[in-house]
Image (cartoon, rainbow, N blue to C red):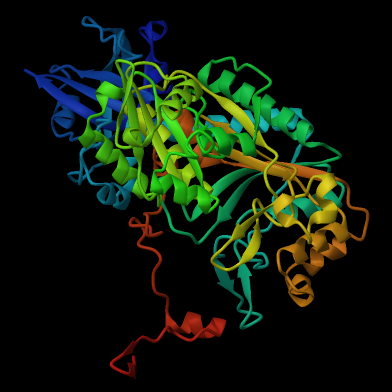
Length: 596
């Protein structure tokens, strides 16, 4: 091999220590400037930018340089010299490379959008169509480098904790419980289907049955669900499972991982242990199971204080087992006019609230939409309960408990952002614990598992699974960072008879249990150890570390909100021969009663 043709060094590594060295570098033309025959070129590779200088006396190179356009790919051999006019905005700003030879490796057409700026005005669909060009931009490139670093740190930490990295199958069994599965038809067994994994849940539990004790995987997962800014049809989980552990053990290991991530990625020391909050308290005081605790403004219960106001709305709500809650927006009464509060009312209604009542304390007097309904003793009780001070604004919602909590929880976050109450430099991590095991869906009149059907109930609730499901609490836990759920897990059921009780409590009949989970119950006959684990969404984690609010910014080749890839144009039709081979008939539309 001719080593002289190999890349000598990355652009961003060049500095004054390389003075007078002859180097070989490669990259893309980021920008070119011709100053009266003296040509300057900003050469970009993955590491960064270095300035090249082409002097007019080198006529052959000058001619080539004259013809260069942005995004041409070139090879340069040159000498590192000190810059006369230094650029403190570049890591390589003390030096430049005096070009001796230049080779154009490939040319580039004019680009469909500008890429040599972090702030592009191109529409997102256009950027997704030309994603390979979009990836050349600095911010996306840095996000993918960050992704790599987070995975490296995670692997290093879990390896040090005696975990084994093991891959589980992508083609598995459809056991729909939650999001829709992506199905894959079998050519060999026509009419039968594999399912792409929504998570490796069952496989990792079977690894515990197999005696591996500590497993982790950077796992690809697939869910056919409606998309949004922080959701994709295919995503990556950092998935782990352990035997012979407790809830506290899992939380301690994951706390250690996040301490290491913050230290390695952000250079910050996290205080441990992380605060733990029960699901009940999270809903009671924050209206959310992923509370942002970087600011106060807790939800407060006014059901007793406002029980006898003669205000028909409050009376009706309490009569129908609803609740009345409020948030106090400190020192903000003068910041919200009646028009502003009408805007907040419209926002509250998007969460199915019937309305938004309000009062202000100004110059010691209570005023507002419902103040006239309050007797003096109610006014005093309200002031005392809410610890009101002059210029405080009180926002009140009366409705079903679920509606009240969701509305005020969302309103709390909206107001905090509007009033800039959140310190962006602060990082609040906490564990939410003691989740309910089940949640009731009134539309179909049945219970669903809050996490998944393999979550273990707390020991004292095992005998209540079928008789009192609403009371059962789970050995489950979520990790929340600044109001974002970033990880969730549980101790799993490891006894066959308990797992059968759980399935029955979820309304599954014997044949259904056997068809969907017979293989798991069979495995539980053979000495299954107590085990539990956790998974966190890699993309959401990177999104938070990167400071972006869109999950597509941290994925190399993401899908649109309609789950399509504009770049390779999928999903797409396939040949009828392929469908025939799989035993699938082409989809036939019916128009005016005629199949076509």
